[in-house]
Amino acid sequence: MIDVLDSLKYLEKIELKTAVVLLRSDGIICIRVRDDAEVELEDSLETFEAVKKLGKGVKMPVLVLTGEGGTVSEESKRFSASKQAGEPTLAEAIVVRNFAHKLLVNFLIKFYRPGRPMRMFTSKGEAVEWLKSYQDKYGDISILV
Image (cartoon, one colour):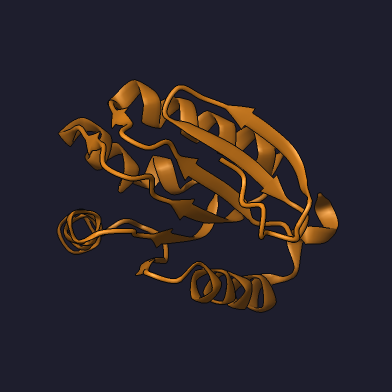
């Protein structure tokens, strides 16, 4: 599940049913959604709590790496775009791997209008660059980790 090519250290890791949530050494929280995960509201709430725990009360940039396949319930979509779900999040970059994920994320951003900066990417590198621009703008929080 963890990129062998990723040269960053992971400071903390929380294993969940549908995802692995990691605190990267650059101060970005990474959510790696498992392949074929069927994400329900309970799973989104569990992921939210993991992000809060790793952020230690500081709004953090969040990188979401989608898995192959899988589904997301309507309740989970609504929660994921909610103001509450965005509380521990400085900005959120979602890296999609296929057309179905592109449709889902576009719908999430345009229809639910999350109350935080959220963008879709096909490149992990571009997503990380975008998140780092928020760290630069709002202060480098990596010193807190």
